[in-house]
Length: 126
Image 1 (tube, rainbow, N blue to C red):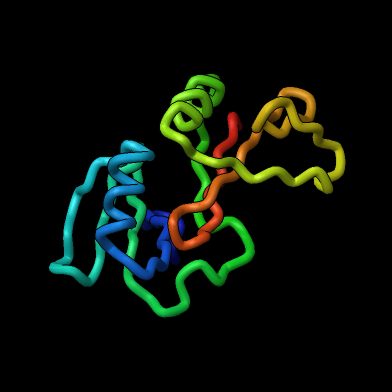
Image 2 (image 1 turned 180 degrees about the vertical axis):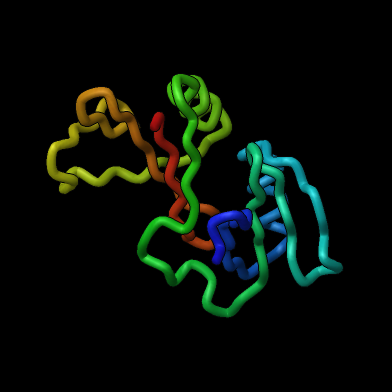
């Protein structure tokens, strides 16, 4: 039924203005649509990231969105570090070790960061 339909990640936030600054300013996503204060839509690759206000923002304890960055992951991480982004470290992840802010398992590289509401965002090279 849904195999031919596009999907998008959706993230709950408390403050749309702060979210706009973080997702556009810090992460560099292009604002594609502003739903009159009800929702923001950001272009990210061939998909969209939808951001909407909710009192439940940041309560998800798992990944809210993931980006596959390929061989650009090191440059992207360095760029985010230069903007002051703080990365999460998960030393308990079996089979992975941490090099700087990057979790590594063989050829796989991964990082996690949080938006202003605590939503967990994941970047990898896969």
